[in-house]
Image (cartoon, rainbow, N blue to C red; front, side):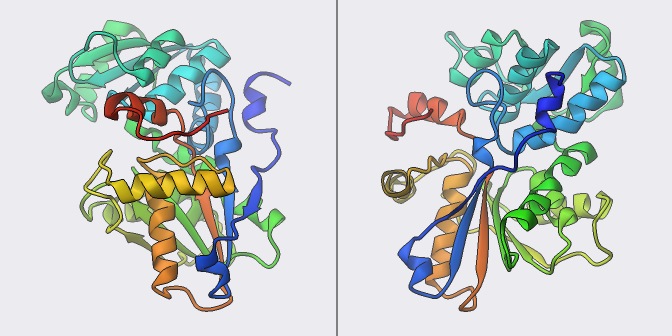
Length: 323
């Protein structure tokens, strides 16, 4: 087995029942799909949905003869860390175009990326906004050499293909299949891939980690482009009321919730994505959003490498053991 084959030939990520009283008291069955336990390479970066979004892209880069990956992200980007870790794991050169100026000491995400051998290139916000322009991309390849280009966040059609495996695995693990899926939404790629991969008539609920309603348009765009497993798109929606102020914003209630889930059930959630998702999901359960007897699968999409950066930035607010 080659190193890259490890991304494809793996057991399904575990499925665990989460016996929270909010669900059991209402006759609901709540499960967590532990994609956070899909891990490979340095740190906790190549993990969860980043594993799934990168696997077919890395295969495509190899098939096209590329030995260099070039991508984009902010200073705390899970995607940047994941690409860097993939480069170290599979001996591929990586270049990260980072929005903003380099600061002394960097942060845990960028320190990890550099330790994995990623070349960090810091650009102004005005230049960063050009990342979708062909001329700017051509200029970058002239400067740093031919490279396989990955978009910010890693969402493209190959990323969706990787995420389509989530419901396929769930069908093998859970009988009868779930009535609902819940997951965090950042760029919309993971959610669109899950929707495209559904064969059964389940509903999909996304919990936005960002302020605003623009993610519905993004998810719809990707769902329309994805090679779906069925003719009719399953019903889906995005809950946009659990972002706690916006991307990377937090409030004491969220941090208390994350700490409590860890202490009671041993599941580590991050404060940027999965913590907000599960907080919102349990709040909907308390509001009787789901019919009695419903079976719900919450997808833990990873994001664990970001906890170190959050704690360094905000003074160690979360006491979680990452293994």
